[in-house]
Image 1 (cartoon, one colour):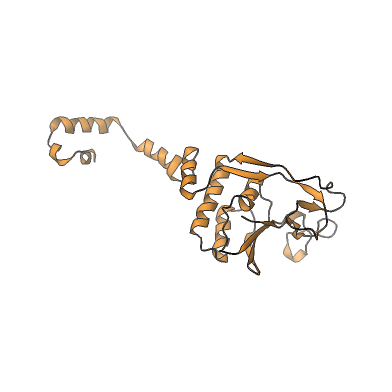
Image 2 (cartoon, helix red, strand yellow):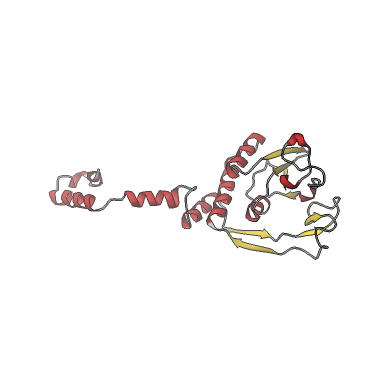
Length: 221
């Protein structure tokens, strides 16, 4: 193999051939190649500058605006764009816009953002493929799916609670997939604490769970 690095006009030079042989015996490039594959080439294991390279490839940066969480007293008829609203005795009155902070994502969070953008770049945005995308991004977390709600609107439903950076990726990053001219929304359903019927097998009975509310709907972007 090392002789393939010698152009034909020097292939019969004993000195040059011997130098190449010595170099091949002294230097094993395989560890460096394995490290390059793990740290850069494979997006699932890439770290640091390797993920930065992937971010440039899919055109998404490491900085992400993650809004502060604000739970306030309010009524179910309120506009979904308002902060998360709670009933009497569970949250204070609204006291102005919640603080938002721009964060530099750590590697695991940035990897999720990169994969989201990469899958969005190649998705045809049909419901079956968007459901597959969600299963790839959030494996083993619980049920997550898209709904066609009509009138050129769709909804991402998560039947589990997302981490703040995950929710920001869905609602703030601009990386989430949606068909052209279709408004996308997202909602989290806290299944273990939501009232429901026994046939569902996962919801809470009377007196132990709260009614599901659509006030948690926010635009997905």
